[in-house]
Image (cartoon, rainbow, N blue to C red; front, side, top):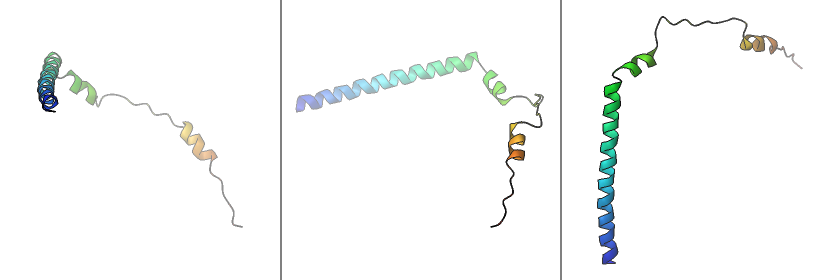
Length: 75
């Protein structure tokens, strides 16, 4: 039992080191990405007020609403 407990402690230490290494690698990758692309992702995701939007009347919802109106009489 003591041998297994000692192995568990060694494994915990190994995983903690592995976790710290992976975390530092991810942080380095994030720093590299942010230094190569300073603000292009932020500005492109917001869009512009100058972009035009074309809206056509009489689309599928207009025809569905007009055709589905039925009057029901009282019995």
